[in-house]
Length: 465
Ligand SMILES: Cc1cc2nc3c(=O)[nH]c(=O)nc-3n(C[C@H](O)[C@H](O)[C@H](O)COP(=O)(O)OP(=O)(O)OC[C@H]3O[C@@H](n4cnc5c(N)ncnc54)[C@H](O)[C@@H]3O)c2cc1C
Picture 1: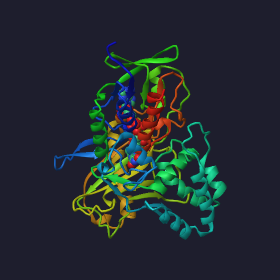
Picture 2: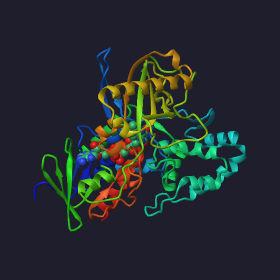
Picture 3: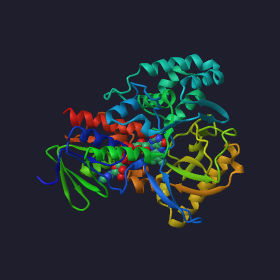
Picture 4: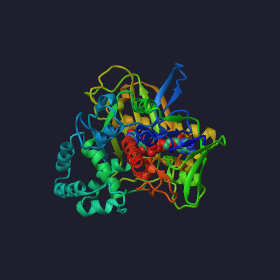
């Protein structure tokens, strides 16, 4: 039959690319389809024109940090598994480790870097009465089997509070993990917490030189070398199934593409909608906006060398969809220039992320939308002036702001929900035989998590079954 494949993978984001590579590696006739004209999904890149100088610039959509940092040669870690499964070389990522990050709550700081001892020592120093409690929690985390796909949901705050009697310490530990990976408001599933704790506090952050394009080009080259098929600008409008089994997908150009196995990274809500079946998966509430601010020069590292700051203006962290356009009581400030050893001259970059309300942004008219984005930019600049010593001495040369509606427009995720639905499909299965969920809504998220999701679900149902 024409247009018949062993498997079709929907979405050329991190999970879709990784899944398609695994299947192609084992000679499956696989087709990867992507709505957009480029790959990357939630972690892609875009072009913006500088109206003053008229030059074009490429920006990463998001990339603050690659989690799960390892040194070359380290084994049995999520990142080494990823390298092995996709047959990629460590050196090709050209990773620059972070200098360090700070969790700043109401002027109380906790510091962490890629050596867990730094975090431990800072907790001992700042929360001496709770240090032993923290060590007990840490033991529980190490003993937990977070990769068990059939594990029940458990609220992390309950677990953390059962060990640690300082509410502020509980909130501070949770803050980076929530904003870098929770679809739930004000809490996260404990299995997800353990994954994030290990990937951020135990392993740490790095950034590939060249940003997200370094990773995407590597994945695309690998897939091409395996002669995998990839079709951009191919928008799937329907997933066809009969007697509970998937058999085809249909494009917006009315083309039918046949396969008994379909791996979808479009999101669980979006995938169920494509199947035209009733479901109770809620649209995720957590969306964000980001200001990108470029200055005439980098901040001097002897003035300020923090890579990422998780800022919160009080003892309590509110991680929820704000009931206003954006919430500037907390923010993530990322300074990509402050990844270790970036001592080159040249312009500086600052990325400031706020939680934001998708529906409110969607309902603005064009004029208000522009004005409110300007307001966000000004708020971000004020925050940088207050939190980053030396920032005021730099000249702002170029700015850009994206909102939750930008995220929706370019990634097609309902509600601009960056971390997908609150309800995940950990085993990747759906009610339709042969249709599997990969990526964010399978429950592994972030760049490394999404790739590992594509690999493991691809292996489980595309290669072993
Ligand atoms: C602003 C921002 C900053 C971020 N920063 C970081 C960071 O610093 N570090 C980190 O680890 N993670 C970060 N993330 C999260 C990370 O990007 C995601 O968790 C990860 O990329 C998700 O990958 P995915 O494959 O699950 O899904 P997606 O990236 O959403 O991929 C899904 C793909 O499917 C395509 N698609 C959807 N519907 C259809 C259809 N009907 N037909 C065809 N194609 C379709 C989409 O176009 C998309 O390309 C960030 C996310 C955002 C938005």
